[in-house]
Length: 493
Image (cartoon, rainbow, N blue to C red; front, side):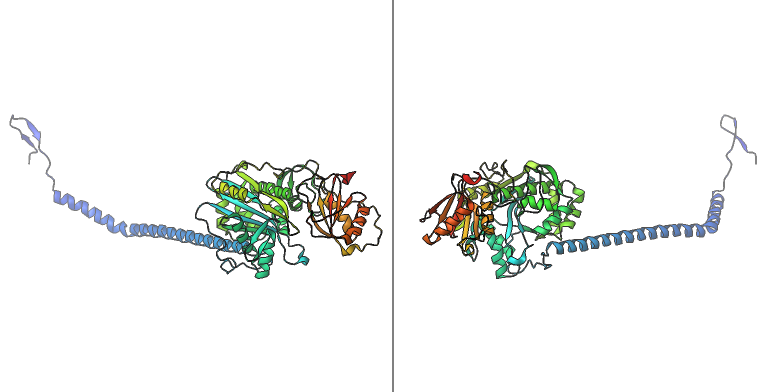
């Protein structure tokens, strides 16, 4: 057939080739079928293997990650249980039962991030005297939203009502509680403080002096600016501390927070030292967030508390970035007084109540501007030796062991009362209360006797001291011993 044709105008053109569509489609399908039969089985198998391998890898990875996560959760849980167990175990290795009758209803879980914590320190090194008393009592107001703390020292001789035991020194509460029930000391102290301050206490933490040294050493020491030399105060510790900014190890820190006998302001100054140290230690603990958990772990066996690990960590983390001036320190507004022949610290109730209300409302009072505001006297030097016995220690016709002598500092010379009492103790006299007079106004040392039969004893004491004036009490002076010595300004004359 001729492939050319003419159009309507008579021009030739090449006609399109005729294509058998059915045949072409058949040939294409045949090729596809051929390729599919030849390669599809092998390709599918490979693809399927890849998919299975990928799924297996993902599955294995998921199982591994899940296992690691589970192991981590279990490890953390075990770690928390171990630490919590340590935190709830006392120095005798006894696990505290927080749901026991002694603790029931004592500590109130806070509903907000503002709450009270009770800090206690006891001295268990000398067990010869029986159950120890709380040597340190500090009430802490924690304000997490505003990153603020208020530390309030409560003098251990504070005259308070102890539930079930009437009026007594606050540090007797621990002893009463332990005598009532083993482990009842802490809850009774907490009840006493709670009623005294009119607040609910959420948590407590207690450390004894031996563990306090270990705690400080576990922190690598604490940097403190010691204002003056503390030299020869062997009742506080066996080390001497010179003034200046320095890192105190455990032994030196214990001396710093215990030193009290030779300050003009006695126990008030010791409390100021304790608050100063707590400020420095808080700064140290919060300075490195990465070490908070390890720090808690290291101190868990040295501290007894009803806070668990996660609560402590959450508080520490919430206080990150706290400024040093956000730690406010106070002591109970009070004075020393005599009640029934015993020296007590008596709180000014209206000032005390106002202080608590102000702190709870976030209106922190300014630093207390009285003589107990925490300023160590410039003249402070611990005295190592007792006063000289002017009779050269010889025996007289007085059986000194039959008499008790109270000694009070009436001149303000640091350590004068302790120096005289130590000398009389060496001479064989029984030493009663050693404290300060309400005012340092005595120019002459007074040797005061209650009964005429004790006048000869007063004369013996005057001979040993070498100065002073003997007078009868006639009810004008309240003291529990046979003789009261009020040290006057002639102490160094």
